[in-house]
Amino acid sequence: MIKGLEVNKALDVLKYSSKEASRNVEKLLLSAIANWQTKNEDAKIEESNLYVKEAYVDQSRTLKRIQPAPQGRAHRIRKRSNHVTVVLDSRNVVEEVELEQENES
Image 1 (tube, one colour):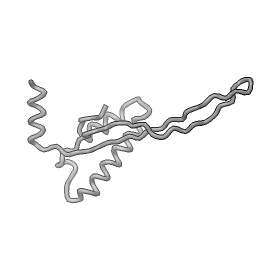
Image 2 (cartoon, rainbow, N blue to C red; image 1 turned 135 degrees about the vertical axis):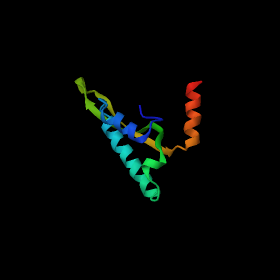
Image 3 (cartoon, rainbow, N blue to C red; image 1 turned 135 degrees about the horizontal axis):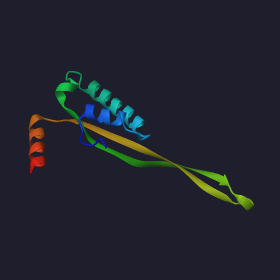
Image 4 (cartoon, rainbow, N blue to C red; image 1 turned 90 degrees about the vertical axis):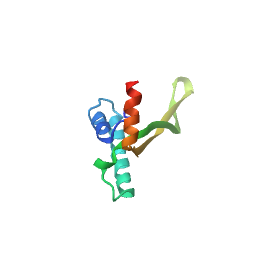
């Protein structure tokens, strides 16, 4: 949902989304912005044209549990987890012009 969007627009999309995971991804995006600010203390967010370059989810560890079943049997329950990765980048004015030209053609 947020891949390729500017940071402010991506935050708005996540804030007003009805998906349950959007709250967690919003917190992750805010953390990514804070990390970018600490690395680039001299730059301002408004002037840097930050956008979400990549956003993807990878599989993580699976916890295996056992649920008792009838007649002495057991069913395996798999509690899955994941890793969410968000990569931010700044757009140059030249890149924006190229993107607009690609969209027009």
